[in-house]
Amino acid sequence: MKMIALVALGGALGAVARFLVVRMLPDAFPWGTLVVNLIGSFAIGWLLASPTARVASTPELKLLLVTGVLGGFTTYSAFNHETLALWNSGLRLSAALYVAGTMVGAWISGALGLWVGRATNG
Image (cartoon, rainbow, N blue to C red; front, side, top):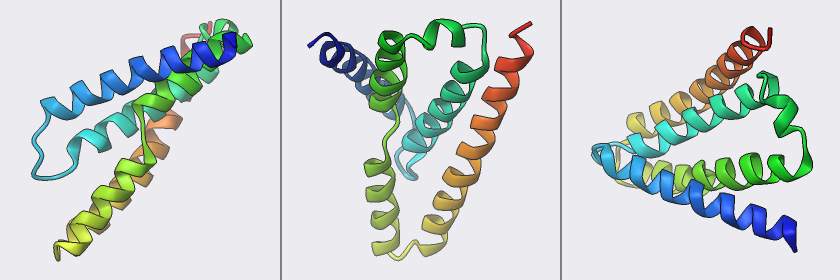
């Protein structure tokens, strides 16, 4: 029950954070989802390699931060929905750029997070 509570608490915090980020950005293009996916990718990479990785290696904190907060913050379903909406609206180039920007950007953000985490690990 404790594990479920940690995931639920983290998920709620992450979902609210995602909502706030998405609301702050223009909606002519799905910038909000792109930004939260890039931030989330960086954060997961950083957590895996940073000094906090020792803390996040405990099962409870990993559930709270990675599964809960970052799982609630980033979302594939919104990415997929927005890609399909762009495609169905005839904005095929925008849809392709969004997919490429998300996939390449998330990979780069994750790698950068690992690098920063290792650099600060002393």
